Image (cartoon, rainbow, N blue to C red; front, side):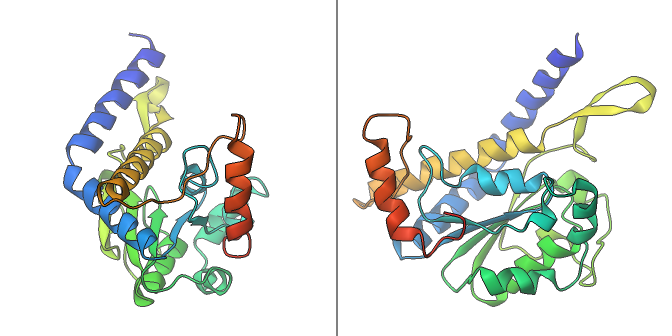
Length: 244
C-alpha cells in the first residue's frame, strides 16, 4: 500500500472513531454553544501553532456562525516566527494579555485547541475563562496528552481543566504514517479537528431550527446575494468581534 493510501485509511479510521466514539460529547458541545448563542453569548476559539488553524476554521466563512471570535495573537501563530511561537506558547502570564483584549464572560463558550494540551497558554487561558463563568471545551488528543506530563506552572493538562473534552483520536506526536528510520509523517489533528468543529456547527443550526429560532450565519461572498447578507453581519459585529 502506498503511503498516501495508508494515510487515507488511518484518517478514515480516526474520523470514524472520533465521531462514533463520542456522540454524547459532540451533542453536549452543540447544545451548549447553541444555548450560549441564542442567549446573546459569544463562541470564542483559541489555538496555538497549527491549533490556531482550527481556531480560524469556523470563523468568518461561508456557512459559518456569525458570533465566533477567534482569540488571535501572532506570537502564538506561525507566520511571524514559527520557532519562536513554541516559546511563547510556554510563557506564563500571556493569557492575561489575551483576555485584556478579548472580554470572555459568563455565558460564553470557549473552544481551546491543543493537541498535546501540556503547554502553559492554552491551559492558563482555559482556567481563566472558566473562572469568568465561560463554558470551556477542550479539543485535544487524549492519546498524546495522556502520555506526557504538564509543561506549565499549574501542573495541569488542557483536558483536566475543561468542562468538556473532545478527542481528535490522534497518535502520540500527531503524525500517523510510518516512514523510513522510524520517522513518522502525516498528522491527522487538523483534518479530524476541522470535521468535528464543522459537524458541531451543523448541529447548532439544527438545534436552533428545532426550537423555532434562528442563529446568524455568514453566506458565501461568491454567490449572488452573499455580499448583502454578510455586510449586514459585519456592520452589526464589527465593534464586537476583533478581526472582523
